[in-house]
Length: 237
Image (cartoon, rainbow, N blue to C red; front, side):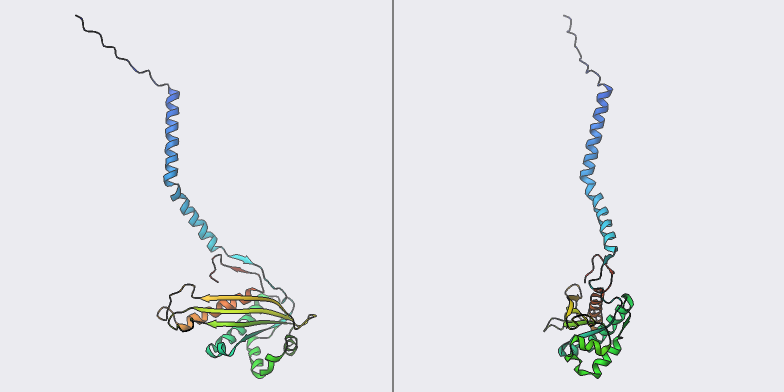
């Protein structure tokens, strides 16, 4: 008996066009998988770069009061006896440095230098009883910039070991040459702090550093109300 012939069925060859479609599909799947796996890693660095650019780009901020332009002015800093007794240098520093900053950065025509203002207050202890209009005329100025220091401390009460500097003030302006020289305009509350984070003690930074930086931040905040300036995007104060 003759053995049956074995029939071997050969698969028909895949058309070239079909092979190309298969390769294209595989490539698309591969790119999609790559995007799923690596996309986050690509976006993250780009986002970080954009955030760094934003952080390093200052923001322009307009003045909230432009009434010093073409006028003469004096800066008057008020604080209660407790603040003055514990931080005797603060009132003097704010008076001098705010006056100098506003003379330099605004279009005011004249001003009472801070040291002269402090001398006037020392020589005339009754100045606190004068109305804004009376004080402005006594000083010979058209604007009075009042800075009422409501709170100033470097620690929480009862905790002298950790720094937690807080300064609060209200800024207002008397337009002495206006129709209502005793009325105060602007009336802006300000709050600053230093350090920015809790947990710093005397072993981390000295008292003079905390005091100097806290008062500097308040000087900035008061002065910035009166002229266009730039602030950091992520400013801590």
